[in-house]
Length: 258
Image (tube, rainbow, N blue to C red):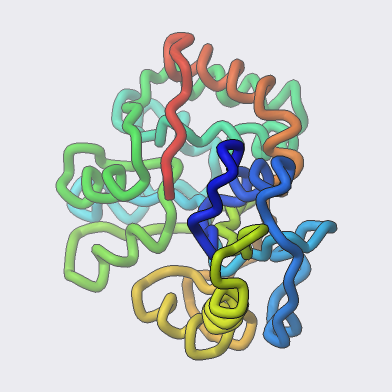
């Protein structure tokens, strides 16, 4: 864009990245009649992008390695001595970390994560990879798995199950129309399709979590809160620094593309 080249019509990625593109004035406000089917959490105030799907942070466990009565019922259960060195955490989840600390209360929340870090969790990059490692048994239990990644393996018969703990946070994935899109009408048609019943059903059939309330899925049948991309971007420096110091040995955090 800074070179004056506008080669895409649609952008679809994680909410914080979409917010960054909005601030760079790379997105055009648009409207769809399917907005009526979306929850308020799907929209930023400026309406330059909208969530078409949600990624929910849940725990997941290998059913061969974690007994039914050992499955965590609360996040504090992750600190049980039986899980020391056996819990997986995705390396880029600083926004989830920030939301959790706020929900717990900063003093209590930071104390919890210091204890979790002291238990020497397994850090890996990629939520898809993390789900596969749990299913294979390399990591018995993961604290931050997108439930749709676990579900993709559940339906294939893999020994993995996911569970939503309170509070459950979601990260929106959003779609937006590029400013100065080469094919603006096609961009509007495509974004409208992605938010339609048909488009959202396609996402469901691929074990994604559609944002539309018109599509029923068991992947969102629990109380949840969405992590606001605006807040994520505004507070990224603080939470990424704390996260890196706790879990990445001070190294720069690598963000997952999806």
